[in-house]
Image (cartoon, rainbow, N blue to C red; front, side):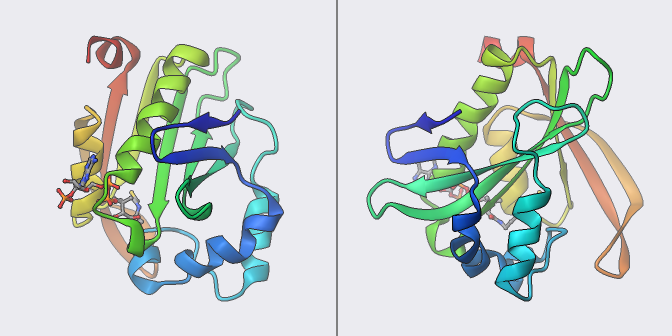
Amino acid sequence: MDFKTERLYIRPVSISDKESIFAYRSDPETYKYLSLIPKTVDEVEDFIKKSSSLLNVPGSWFQFVIIEQLHNKVIGDIGIHFLDTSPENKQVEIGYTLDRNYRGKGYATEALTVVVNYLITGLNKHRITASIDPTNKSSIQLIERLGFRKEAHFIESLYFHGMWVDDLIYAILAKEWRKK
Ligand SMILES: CC(C)(COP(=O)(O)OP(=O)(O)OC[C@H]1O[C@@H](n2cnc3c(N)ncnc32)[C@H](O)[C@@H]1OP(=O)(O)O)[C@@H](O)C(=O)NCCC(=O)NCCS
């Protein structure tokens, strides 16, 4: 599944994206809130290989890349976690990362708008969630811009990069997205 927006292409990740992804994901400011801390391009290759090659497999993560049309450059990625392992498979979690040189232009908003829309209207998902550190202001602003609501603030519920941290859960229902 590929998408084209005004300024971007969004397509499934491929092994050939490993250097481009390493370039922005190895930046400490970028991985601060992410599980993956790649020290080598090979670690990014493993990460890509571990992603599902098929969309919509219960229990799996699927990875898209975001490409800026202007320079035909990979500038970020979007992960989709098909959370619901029941046969209904109606709930997904999203994750997202942008190269720091391409922030502040609305690219993440533009990319996530089409992906979330596809999850709801194309794959018929019921609920989409995001897990965000309360200190990650850009991510909170982005998810609220997309219309997600804060549902929970868990206290020190995640052991992350060697310490216990809080976790915000944001969500949107299909009916809320359709009303927007
Ligand atoms: C989270 C993250 C993707 C947000 O990136 P972002 O650039 O702030 O989000 P967008 O690309 O949607 O850009 C929005 C900004 O561009 C501005 N903007 C400019 N042109 C715009 C346009 N045409 N449309 C929308 N916004 C536009 C907005 O005003 C906003 O600026 P502000 O933050 O100063 O209010 C980015 O900070 C990131 O990759 N962080 C590291 C990884 C991470 O933490 N991921 C999330 C884990 S939960």
